[in-house]
Amino acid sequence: MALLEVSGLHAAYGSTRVLHGISFELGEGSITALLGANGAGKTTTLRALCGMVRTEGEIRFGGARIDGRATEDIVRLGIAHVPDGRGTFDNLTTEENLTLGAYTRKDRAQVETDMERVFGYFPRLKERRAQQAGTLSGGEQQMLAVSRGLMLGPKLMLLDEPSFGLAPLLVRELFEIMRTINQRERVSILLVEQNAAMALDLADHAYVIETGRVVLSGASGEIRRDDAVRRSYLGY
Image (cartoon, rainbow, N blue to C red):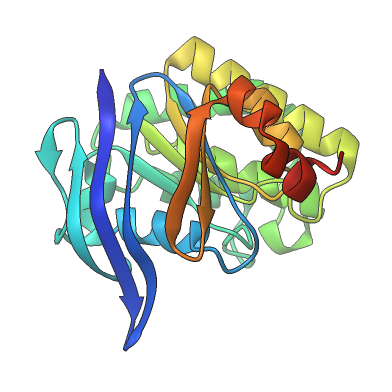
């Protein structure tokens, strides 16, 4: 069953068009990767799904159209966006950042339970719950960004370059946690990632975007075996 369905999506910044009618879907409980070179339109795709750029075309979430809706309304539906650059609030503590992630929720007791569950995934954040986010390491800030998205209680997480700037060991740790979250909590994930090999290892399905158009799609194993993908993104 498709949780997210995108059809003929165009997006632009002012007069500059970035997406040219892309279409794709994401199954409920799945992990889907968006691959492509810098400037291909991957980040714009995530922003378009959140109503952050001007769009044309259809976006359906859980069968209902969400294109044209305000970003806050889309968040309330259960779509959490973890942007590139992490986007943590540096002057707030780790715990305050996590509390902000749950700002749309009314179930305060469940929010407290979810915070402890997040700390179970990222125990280092629990150790630093009273520490200002701006003083955390890069890896800890990325963990905090993902955790803040989880505090929304999402059905779908949009992750933009979660491995950027992280040491390989931290990247592997973060990706294993994302796999666990997907399997244990059935949170669907749409992953934009420059590390194509890691993304394909994690994802069930993948789409390759070039200059704002989908040029290839399929199961991750099929994409990995494609000669053009191997040369351009996997380096062999």
